[in-house]
Amino acid sequence: MNAVTTHLDDLLMVLRASADLHPTAETSGTLQTQIAARLESLRPDLAAVIRSMDDWHADVLADFVAEAHVVAAALEYPPGRRSASDDTKVG
Image (cartoon, rainbow, N blue to C red; front, side, top):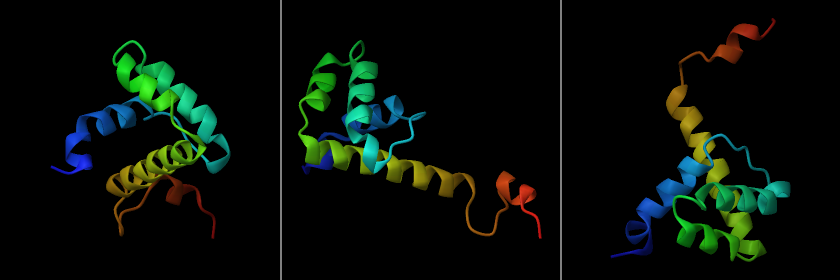
């Protein structure tokens, strides 16, 4: 079994914990801290793993969460479907 399959529940938990966060490349350390804090009461073991990530892995985590937000937006507003922001465009 590959690592993604093995840790799918953990990845989903991380995504749920970060659902209302909006990561950027400059905030990977902050995101790491926020996710770990949110996971502490539910999964202290996973929170500890998140806290122990080095800078490179924290950046990967931020990219993962950011990409999840992009995919979620694409699911909400697929190509050809108008978004709420389209209604505010002038011209």
